[in-house]
Image (cartoon, rainbow, N blue to C red; front, side, top):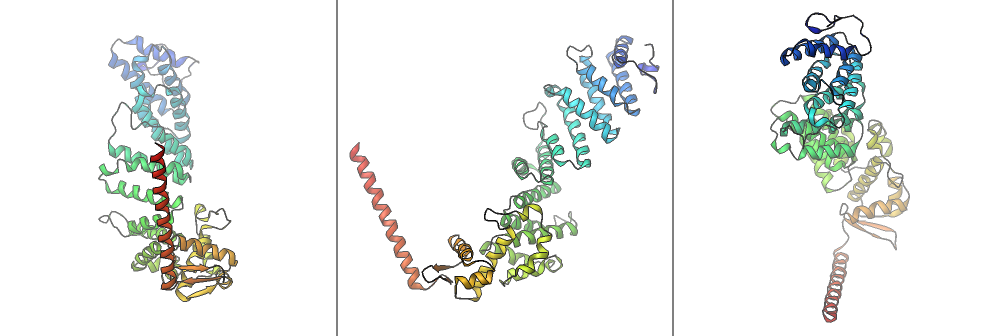
Amino acid sequence: LGQLGEGGVQPPGSAMPGNAIFQTLSGIVSSTSDASNRMEQFTKLVTSLVEQHDVQQLKDVIDCMLAEESTFALFARPVLQSVTEKMEKLKNNELKDLALHTLDRLRGRVVSFEEEDFVIRELLSEVFQAEGDWAEAAKCLAAINLETGTRCRTPLQKAEKYVKIAELYLEDDDTVAADTFCSRAAMVMHEVTETPLQLRYRVCHARVLDSKRKFLEAASKYCDLSQQTFGGQICEADLLQLLKCAVTCAILAPAGPQRSRILALLCKDERIRSVEHFEILQKMFMERLIRASEVQKFEEGLLDHQKATAADGSTVLERAMLQHNVLAASRVYKNMRLPDLGSLLEVSPERAEKIAAKMIAESRLAGFIDQRSGIIHFDGGDENLQAWDRHIRNVCTNVNSVLSKIKDQSSMKDT
């Protein structure tokens, strides 16, 4: 074996020529005809190189094993398995270098090395997470074949990976990708009984809704989670954080009956007074007017997606506050001139009318706007006007019905 020490493994610190690894591997093969002895010596070689942190020669081992028409093809899988089992002992930068090299060599041949590819990607993802590169960490795990591979993965394994990938994409603010993997997790979660994983999925789902600015639904999910202890498996600090998220989303949610129900649930919680921004939440629940100066501190603590600007140039928070104040005004006044409503909301009369009209159209505000006189009437107006509206609606419905019948008869005559 020339330069090789006992067992066919080169002594640490000795120099090797450029093709030394190939010669070493060839020497192991020629030294014995017994396959188990050869594998034992290959394992010793890998162990020695890992202990020396010799990444370059580990790469050479991988290249020799995975080369086309390799003379070591019979041992490629067990040797690669040995490398993956021991590579976690390397430093992060060394592991990253070796893992990326190995994955590059496995490209197009993953079917034959599925388990090794799985382990390498998990280790590499951990390195990317340590570096704060959430996108690469997620992509690394997302490339694992969990559905159509030769190895059958359990629902628990699939769910754990999908939830983890969704969490990583959320850290990177990639809502679309996070939603995709959260949806995949949802398909197998009904078969998962582990409480911690179920909790992670539900929190992840709530965060996806939050990131997509579906604040009403997110607030409902967070509120539900914050009021469950899962048999004491969740610490009080985490439950309080979920309650805080519920408060934030409830404040940002569009004003209306659904939000009022969530506000009522939150205000009944005994812990609510210890949560930041309780004062604003209480004013919303009591349907009191909130001035712009009062929400400045609240706005400072919002995440980037919660500060998003709409097409009309307003922020999510600004729109939520304006809608709330319209609702609060409807509890105080029976009717108002639109300029007065604009003054109360600190916006132009035109914008005040637009906000109120949208809320009325979506059945989030009871009332009507008399555009001729420029007055908004709250509480749905008087009975005579409502009756008149019903008559007009019935006439329009009957006219549509007659037109449909005429059209049907005309088509029958044509045939």
